[in-house]
Amino acid sequence: STWETTPAALSLDEVVPGFSAALEGQTVGSQVLAVIPPDQGYGDQASGAIPAGSTLVFVIDILGVDEAS
Image (cartoon, rainbow, N blue to C red; front, side):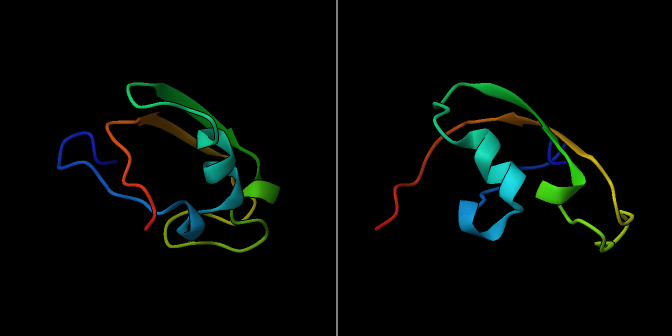
């Protein structure tokens, strides 16, 4: 969670496929609820404190976009 800290800057080619798919076509100012099934997340592998086979849930506020150079 970054709600109580500074916003996170993310590159969509560095996140799980379901995360980038949830943001495709969204605009600055949008709030997106992304529910990502295991096959679009970490699948059968754990990642840190996230167990294998987990469904991921994110609420994403799109505050801005840095265009790729």
